[in-house]
Each structure stands twice: as structure tokens, then as C-alpha cells.
Length: 237
Image: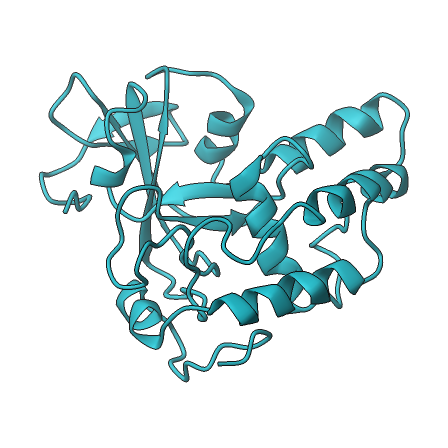
């Protein structure tokens, strides 16, 4: 398997197809990290953290990215009616990363994007970065989403994986355009298995289930209300 491009030929790769295609081995992961470290430009704090990475950090990672456009993903939050910036962006149909939010504040404080990315870069929305850079930045996000500020947002592959964390679980369908990370044996999702979805990714419909309630509800952006949907609309298995 090559580490820059997927070996899978499916146009829209599903979770099962990505698992079937297999994962990077340790040597491939070493090559990926080395390639990313040699790439330019790279932020000073990013390079410092990349130097700490090992080929086995974060468990197994699929060689292929999941790209099926209607893939269900899930994320839990502590408060059911939270007004934090991330949930507000989800309500607007955008997956917004810590790096994007931090950059907004940095620029408002008088800094420039160029100065910001010189520390926590590279800016993955710029053109020309290879797959090794994206994979390594995802590894850094697994290690810490704060140093450097992650340009990705982690989502579980299923409802059960969110466990008992948080009072509310948000669900949506999207093209993750992400490998599956955190696998133990590259066969079965479970535990801390997740996607790392690039900030700025958009989607259509947002659902929420509060732990103390039995029903899923769909967010109506026109009325700013949550509306109950029929059982089975959002898969929980």
C-alpha cells in the first residue's frame, strides 16, 4: 500500500470498504511522518510536536479515506443546550475547528494569518499538501487538539462510541474525507475509533438526542427549534 494515495478504487468509499482495504503498517507510518516533517511550509509548534510522534501512536489508521457522502457521524457535548461556538457552527451547517476559531480571534487581535500559520501551520486549506501532511496533522490532533490547534474535528463512527460522555449527542451525514483512526486491529470499529474531519466541511441536516430523552430531533434553522423525527431516522447501531 502506498502512503500518499489510497489503493481503493471505489468512487465513494464506505466505512466497511476502508476497513477491508486495510491499514498502514509501522514502516509506512514512519515514512508518512518523515515526509510530513520534511514538507514546507510548517509551523514551529507543529514541527516541535511532530518530532515527538512515533509510528505506533494513535493505533491503526486505514490506508483509505472514507468518502461516502451520506456517512453518519456523531459527537457528544456536556450540555444539552450548549451555546458554545462549535455547536453554533453545527447549527449553521458547518464543522468548525479549533484552529479556525483560534485564527479568527488572532486576526481580531491584530495578528495576520501568515503569522498564525508560521506557528500552528501549515494551513491545510491551502493547495499543494500531500497525503502524508494531512495524516500526520490528524495524528497530532489525536495527541492534542490544542497544541497545535487542530484543523480537524473528531467524530465517532456510531452512536454507541459516544458512550456516556456528555448530555447530548449530535448526529449528521457528511463526506468525512477522512481515514478511520484509532483502530486496534484494523478490523472492527470500537473504543476511541474516529474520523478527523477537516474544519470548514459543510453538511445539510443536524440531529440531536438528549441523554434524558428517547427521541432524536432535527434542527430547523428557520425557526431555531428542534423537531422530533420518527424512530429509526438516525441509526444507533
